Image (cartoon, rainbow, N blue to C red; front, side, top):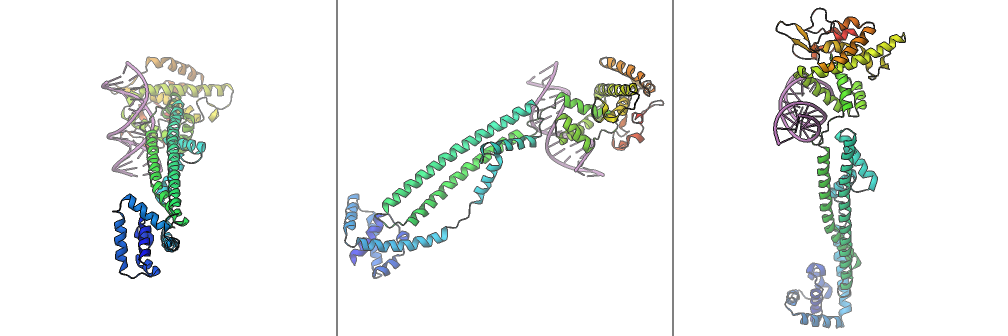
Length: 430
DNA sequence: CGAGATGATTCGGC
DNA sequence: GCCGAATCATCTCG
């Protein structure tokens, strides 16, 4: 009777169990057939245990373990515990996977930090490089490998931390499990309860894991922004690319708006993206328009260049006594327009300086003279251009009076405002 | 190191 | 969605 109550209190106290662990005292009372007034007594004793010295507690523990009623009480407690634990399990078991962890996992997988070693990482790096739209030249390669190296570094840190975490988690779990198994000899701990405890530990550790994943994601984001911020990693196009673009620009000065196909072709030729081609033309148009004078020399250079190309093609064609085919030019597959437009550009792009009297002044840079001479020789040899070479006049023309190309979307129908009598519009030479 | 060049971005207009 | 214009950020060169 009284012994049993004390023993119950003693067992509970010595095992470090709370009221929740031993179940409702009321139900205990019912099962043990104790009157209600004893509950206060029990609680009193439970509270008193904490005040006992270690020796006293040990002595009490020993007394309890040796008590003849211990096995019976132990089984009763186990029964109560089982019911309690089951009810708790029923509530807590089905917690869904944390969406935050899932998001982080997906992101790490996409970034190539988690998942298979090679594929993910290089795929992400490739995607990054593609997104950056940088020129895939030597510099691009360096950047690419740099990005990959840094990503690999993050990946390595992540995995080593994850390993540490897993190790710590399993060590702690083992420790707790051993402890509980040990304690299950003196207090009622079912395997299910151990499982539950393990789950609790894992939940606690997974919050640490989430922090690790979160900081890894942040590191990857910072890395990406550093490498992918286009302004940050701006690289000048290589010389050949700029030349190709300039060639197209000046040979289509009447309408420097490449079609989608032309952009694609230029992009391919220059090993840049279509949007970079668009950017380039956008910048070029605006800068050319803003300061035509500054671009005169460049315009002459490309005009001469393309004209020479076109003329040599034409010469070859006439030598072969057959018409020139559109794509036979050395200057590229858009050379059909070159042939006419380029020679026309030569005519049209000589620096025009209007003197005080409004007369056009031909102004050829000395550095261009040899090329111009060559052009003259070649063009004299070829039919159709001789007349043109005598009427060379620069007209930054394609721009109308409002300094716009807008009205020149049909170049062949447009005449250049400043063109004096005798001048030939470039586009008509086609 | 500073000025100019250059590629990219942003924003408003159409 | 493309364009012009303004602007930013970086590169290049003297």
